[in-house]
Amino acid sequence: MLLFKPLTGLSTNSDLYIYWDWYLDKAAQFYLGGEITRQFLASFLEYPPSQRPDSWSLDRFQLMLEQRMRAAQQQAN
Image 1 (cartoon, rainbow, N blue to C red):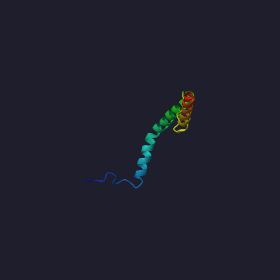
Image 2 (image 1 turned 90 degrees about the vertical axis):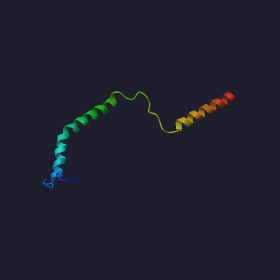
Image 3 (image 1 turned 120 degrees about the horizontal axis):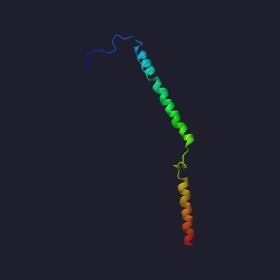
Image 4 (image 1 turned 30 degrees about the horizontal axis):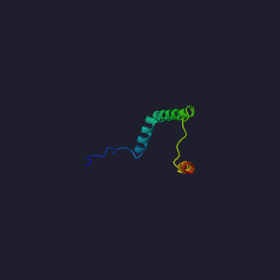
């Protein structure tokens, strides 16, 4: 059971004040986080991926299967 209301006596704008107070206290961290993120994303331009990303479609698998079947048929003949 709550014995007292901790925000009793604060004005109706107190929630807004608490939000902006917290936001201003953390503003430097937001900018620092954005800068770190920007540097990380820029590293992808400096060092592009070393291999082609894999595909989730079955087209390449179907093509490989058809090639192996043709090769097996040619060996059988």
